Image (cartoon, rainbow over all chains, first blue to last red; front, side):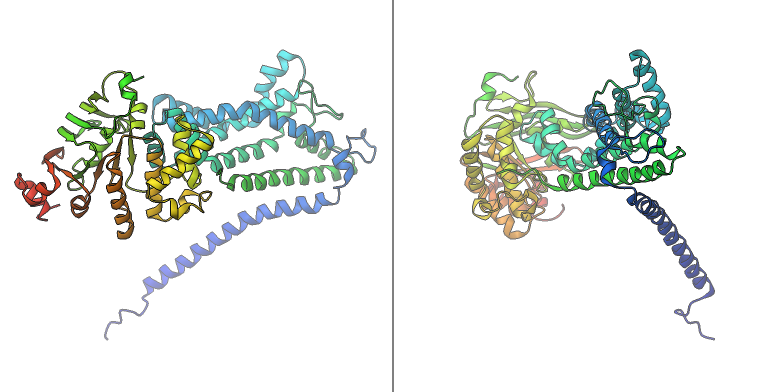
Length: 289
Length: 267
């Protein structure tokens, strides 16, 4: 019997079958992970859209058991708390990221900061809330939006730091050398050339951090605390969407359940809208002439 | 800050290298280079890969020391002043000694105009209408104006490779340097773009002292007035083998190694 080199042997068929099975498993896994995302989004959409009305966007909560009312104060509250968190965390986070990528690099201090930053990422958000409670709420004597913003800021900090660093490191050294060769001081190279080059990426990283922080509930429970009334004073307790959703969801009232779903839908929509807007803004090149 | 005389441009500038050695960490890359670069002329630096050509020119604008662990010994005299003297700010040196790199590297987020304008703007040389004029003049000097005058708002990276490299030359010229260093500026370009840049260098040499690194001997023969031939010995440390007028070096080399290299026996 002559040997036929191109006739599949048993070994070849076995490898081909293994490959098919492995591929199938991976497609299934990819489908499941995307499917889970769409299931959550779809569920929130279906449940939330029915409760969404003008009252939700314009009114403050009614007393328990009374129908109607809305989440206007919580929407504004979330906005204020997130802005406070950004004001506190962005200068520090972006600054630390710049230090790690442009100055510290492989130095001992840089590695220490990197390690601590990663540790901070893993700290449960409820612990960060407790921390804010201890250093701000207790000394001040009352809950406040400021304490909530501080807690969210601490949660954002490591994400912003590492995102900034990663994005700056993606800027090739040839760009830094070109800038240095023009006779720019190091700080001008960093702020006027490298940072603008990485701007889109840094912005995306910041928005991911914002999106995560905006949805956090645990750190706000004993910092911003929540507030059924209008309040724009950051030193006072303030409502926030996740808090309102939490309170309404565990309440015994059907109307509040409906509003909790609507609030959840709103939160998801806001986070999505922020990301989309930022990507459009980030895509524009800062060219002038 | 540098002494006052390091601030005043002299055209065309002279550049003299004295006993220059360079290291990357523990590894020595250059040993005892002595070289007199003639003002207002084009000097080519040739030699096989790894002989330290790039390191040498990066020592001339103090860019070598930017690499972590890199250091330099010896002197480089720009119009008689040592750019490595204590107290000399490398930033000031780099404003006077411009550089163009092997791969075109326009700033990717900036327009054609911004790429040229950022140098004089950040260095405080010009603003407003004066700045616009300077940008136009630099683009004309780099023989790029006619091709980009309607594309000034486009990203610099939208141009062709050859145009990008001339944009980088315009960017370097806009900060008004006295010396222009080019580190294999045409390696990534096609022959037509290469010829354009060589023509451009000939036009620039009356105003600027030019040093061009190339591993293309024909290019050195075509554009340069003087040529330096470098070679790394068995210890991989680059040394200057021969330096002289280009015609002499190519037709009547003094060193047998130069002859071997230019006749294509190695490299």
